[in-house]
Image 1 (cartoon, rainbow, N blue to C red):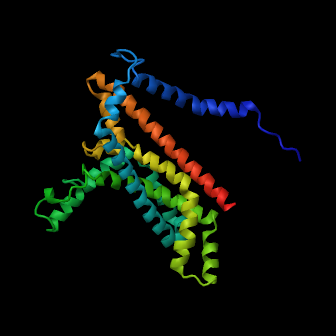
Image 2 (cartoon, helix red, strand yellow; image 1 turned 90 degrees about the vertical axis):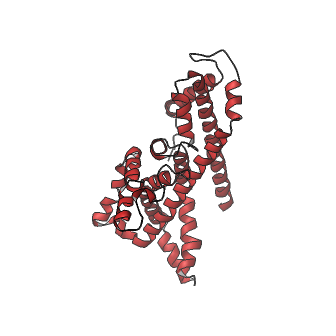
Image 3 (cartoon, rainbow, N blue to C red; image 1 turned 45 degrees about the vertical axis):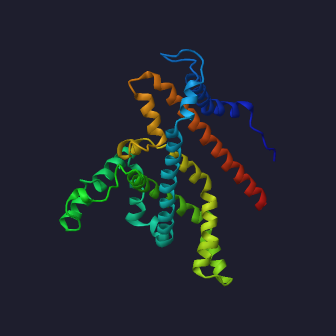
Length: 286
């Protein structure tokens, strides 16, 4: 049987469609940040880069975004795995098999509003706690929304991400034949906890690593939820970029493009590192 290799057009066209706009956007951001274009641009300069790189708020915002994204994803991973191994095939049967898809239809901004209505100082839970006598007044409810620790953002992202991860892990459990591997390990004398910790979880997390890496980057760069229920200081990197871009002072707009370029470079580098690590692991396994 003769195997035909793909022609050049079948490779070049997708690269142009996907990479072309991203390349143009990257060039535009870089040129704007360097003063090459812009309404008030004095000409080519590195002043905007020096201002952003020397500003502690830049690095605090990046670290804060990484913390919120990692905490949101970690909580969702733990809860999703617990659901998958507790319910098993029930996730694909009856009403539950349909209801699990419904949270995926909720936009992030709606999730932000719901989080504020549920966990805010005047939200539903604070009023319930007041009626039950647990707190003296609704304002005494713990500060979850607009918290400096990003608790409201983490909660909103948790409710958005967990259903997706439940579906992902349920599919991986079947595709990777995790149940058969667990049964084999138990036949060889391992306990259920040992098979779960040393067989099931490593197999599923390794298979899910690409999707989890991309989702982490999405959560780090999330915009709607942090803008709606996040603290002003520290703020996530997306909100910081928006604040620099949307100010009435147009002189700060190039700093927004510096921040965008810096964030893009860091995220692309992180993806390349993850990709290289995965390739190394695959070679080691072979």
